[in-house]
Each structure stands twice: as structure tokens, then as C-alpha cells.
Image (cartoon, rainbow, N blue to C red; front, top):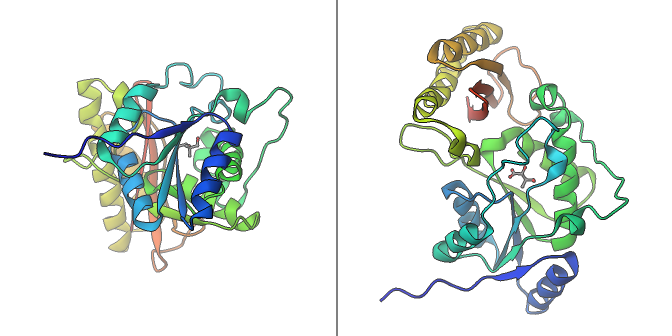
Length: 286
Ligand code: PAF
């Protein structure tokens, strides 16, 4: 018979979380944090597995962060199901504690600080969502201060976010390692995302083109087509496939997201496009 799912503890504020982490640390445990906004899928569970490979104890935070949504974005309708998320984590194993702070535990009355990360935080997503990385950096900094982990795990699916967090951790001398985990994909290559739940069956078919177009842009650039040309072809192919709007298709330096003349250095192709009201992002190594 298989073992019953492990019971996961919960903390709902920094004091409770720190107490638990201190008890683990007193016994010599290494700790990893997996920051999430809930609506967990196999991509998040891959982060938990990668965390468990490195650390003795794993904390999964679950907080839909208002600071990273603009007023017109999907904060109100973002899927929330803490009980369902807990059941998924318990069934998967590997998680010791869920940190589900109340909004006031992160943003108490009078909260007035915003972190700005330049470098990899400038351009691409910021051109379209200027509030986004400041909201992410601020909440991730708070989660890291509350948890003080040895490792923090981020999916490569949000590649620019991963670089922004690495930059912030380096700049603020936070004593921990930021670990990037490869994107988990459906059979047709669609990157797993909580926002895929918004797609109609028709839109889901359109979404299937995004990773194929990125692969084609990478191939074209490697074959010697100029980067602006390969990017323009990619954007046209997305519209042709049924996307309603393309925010960007961009081939950039994989470490800094700087513009490139050619793909001699490690590079990454990134895209954001909308189908109906849903905005999808994806990226891959070139
Ligand atoms: O990637 C996400 O789910 C969020 O941006 C994060 C890192 C949990 C911060 O709210």
C-alpha cells in the first residue's frame, strides 16, 4: 500500500514562518523556498522536486501579489484555491510548509517601499507591464527576508523574472542561491502556466504555435538570418497562427537580455503575445 500523503504545516505570517525555519536550522537543515501565486500545476511541482534535491526542508509560498498587477489586469479573477493547492502538494510530497501570508503580513498599513531592478528588468515585459518587476522584486525580497532560505527556485518559463531576481539577490548581497528550473511543457510544447486555464479550446490550439514559432526564430538566427529579420518573421507567424496581438518576439543575450548582433554568445528567444484577453509568454535557449 502507498503511504498516506504527508501533512504539510502552514504559516500565515513572518513570525510563524521564522519560528519554524529556526527550529529546522537548529538541527542543521538546509532550506529552499518556492515562491508561487498558487493555482499550482506540474511546473510548480517540478520546482518543489528541484528544491527537495538541494534542501532538507521546502517552503512553498502562496500569495497572489497585488503589487505586480496593474489595475486593468487579472488580479481579481486570478485563480485562487488554497485547499486544492495543498492537496496537490501533499499528494506530490516534498513540501514541508506552506507560507500563505495575509495581504497585511506582506503589505501592512503604511507600507511605502518599492524595489526597482534595472539591467535585465528594463525592456520586454517592462515595456508592456511597467509596474510588474517592481511588484515582483518587492514581494520576493519580503518573502526571502521572512524565510531566509539557502535556495530560492524560479521557473525558466518567466525567464526575465528569473534574471531580475538573480540581479536583485546579487545587488543586495542576499546569502542564498537563485536556482532556475527548466520549463515544463504539455505534449504539444505549450508551457504550463496558471493562465492557460483562461483559454477556450480554440485559443488553446492557437497557444500551441507559440513554442514552435520560437524554435523557428532560433533556427533562422542560427542559420545566419539577421536577428531583426528572424524576430519580424516570428511576430508575423504568431499573427498568422491566430494570436490577436504580439507584444514582442526578441532574441537577446541569455545572461543580460542585452541586444545582440548575432547568436555567437549564449542567447535566448523570448515572446509575449495575446490570444483573446489572455497574455501568454514563453522563451527558449537558442
Ligand atoms: O512567478 C510567480 O508566480 C510570481 O511572479 C512570484 C515569483 C511568486 C512573485 O509573486
